[in-house]
Image 1 (tube, rainbow, N blue to C red):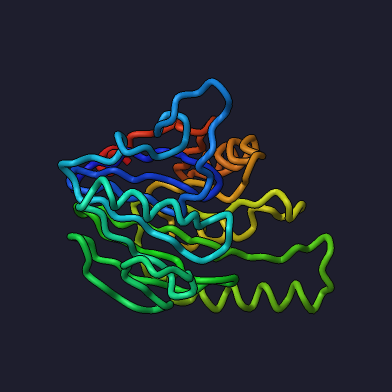
Image 2 (tube, rainbow, N blue to C red):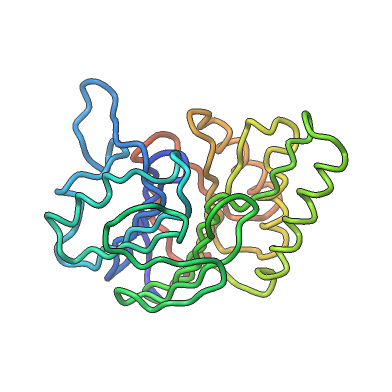
Amino acid sequence: MGNARITYLYHSGYVVETDNHFMIFDYYLDDIAQGQKRGIDAGVISFSDLPKDKKITVFVTHNHGDHFNPVIFKWKKDRANIEYVISSDVKTRAKAVRMAPYEHVDVNGLSVDTYGSTDAGVAFAVIADGLNIYHAGDFNLWHWIEESTQDEVKFAKRAFLREMENLKDLYFDVAFFPVDPRMGRGYDAGAAHFARTLHPALLVPMHFGKEIQVAETFRQKMMAGGQLCWAPQERGDYCDFDPQQV
């Protein structure tokens, strides 16, 4: 089993790089701050960041504008070793492997399974160089408890727990899961339940937009409860994950 470098891009966008693979998940923000140099260190992908000696796979969990930017298809012009694996709800004429929930495909040297969402699209479970990786996309406990009716909250919980039944017996070395501060109280309820149920070796928060301090608050909470968790401090931040040291 190999190691992985995990790099934060923005929101739910991450890069996972293993010995033979360079995987990009839910890339959407292609802008950088004035004066910064374009590149992965600034949270964007430039052509120079795309390795020539590894297989590149770009994943899109669904068609929402904060998870999908068509600019990803321009990368193919410079790197023929790119494959795209996208949710079936993404509208594009670009060549890509399209997946609906609960499907399997072997592509670009990866084993890819999809699971359901409580919003749009799919969640991805990917095996790369022996590492089991899960990206939830917009699967979450979207309870909106401070503004929803009791019936709406109950409906959200039922939908979430129903999908968790499909995941409860799986193991992941690295799992990316939403912690959305817009939900206010219980913003991390879905992620906390996911961690208690599946116990991933490393849990990584996402979907917090500009409120990056939320990720650190969540990390501290998880670590205090014995769940290994990494939270980026800024765009381009990275961690090196070694499953043998967990």
